[in-house]
Length: 429
Ligand SMILES: NC(=O)C1=CN([C@@H]2O[C@H](COP(=O)(O)OP(=O)(O)OC[C@H]3O[C@@H](n4cnc5c(N)ncnc54)[C@H](OP(=O)(O)O)[C@@H]3O)[C@@H](O)[C@H]2O)C=CC1
Ligand SMILES: N[C@@H](CC=O)C(=O)O
Ligand code: NA
Image (tube, rainbow, N blue to C red; front, top):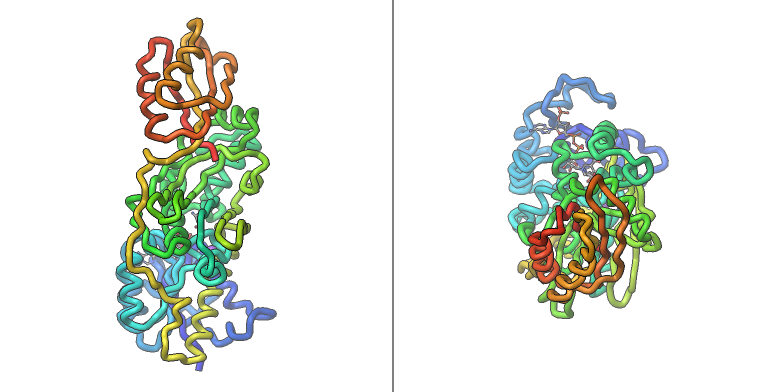
């Protein structure tokens, strides 16, 4: 007997998933067991790029998760509600779940996985992080024998696409965002992409898998790309860097007491492997013991790549259903019990890039240096680079410094008569 799917959502990812399931030639034979039974959408009468019997589409999503003949619910609608309630309802009804919804998993993971464990079903979410890159299964299974030290990734396709085009074409953020939306990369509300929240959801999920405990999303520091300007991209280039939105989870000590989990635009050396990841591509660099460094690269968004990730989860569940094992597979279920302690951002030790607009007073650089010295900030490079109108522009890159100390030095610098403003403060990898 076939394995019956109920799919919630037929937008970019839903369409990619259905297209793959309708074109089985040359793919894994187990996919032939899959039968798309029902698809829930907001507007059943809208024209669609896939051909389906009209009776399959419905606006009643609750009826789909309560349909006793359905084995697997594939949630591809996005948003928090009704996605969360429909997933919980499906689990309660003994159905396995596949979802691409990182927002729901990162916020309601505890509730959802506890419910799934109690019901003896699996919740799979390969598509939720880095689209087509098989990073969830890799962390859960292939790398799980390692002690993970750090996970550093470009995990948002929209912002990487925008930053790449700002860098190569000198375009403005807003004009490139419209293209990312047309290409189906952006979230329904692209604020989640631009402000780093989508990457925050994803690094919370990756950190939880890498470090073996839950992550409270509120502890994840998130800064997006709104403040990244063409000016900074040009200065970064002159200093040998590119600017990337990085999602970082790093164990600063052996006992995980100083775990840092954060998202922010970052200056990355042009020679670093993440510097050359452009466009909608994502990459995740994992460092662990004994493996050392391993990097995953691939398309982070879009219908086909994300459909591939969704279908790989479906395939895993079909195999599980077909082999009919009564025992839960601990490599597929969630084993987390406790929450990780995350260090506040003020404790972070990192290098900084800062750009100052100053009145053209003599000795400004000396005054900046004296103030930095007071707060243990030492400078790696100082570039006085000309003028913006009446103002002289000074760019500095620091050595490693505790973020709290650096911020204190900036507060004092703000009060200096010679300083007009500090338009950019960015971290350096
Ligand atoms: N786009 C991408 O590249 C990627 C997206 N994701 C994730 O996949 C999920 C889906 O994203 P995407 O395909 O881009 O989203 P879309 O906005 O393209 O599609 C959403 C689909 O869900 C349906 N839908 C939304 N809300 C409701 C509702 N309340 N009731 C009924 N139907 C609803 C819509 O119906 P209708 O068609 O009638 O409007 C539409 O078919 C999100 O969680 C996203 O974060 C993950 C990786 C990559
Ligand atoms: N909006 C997301 C889609 C994939 O998760 C992105 O741009 O990465
Ligand atoms: Na993935």
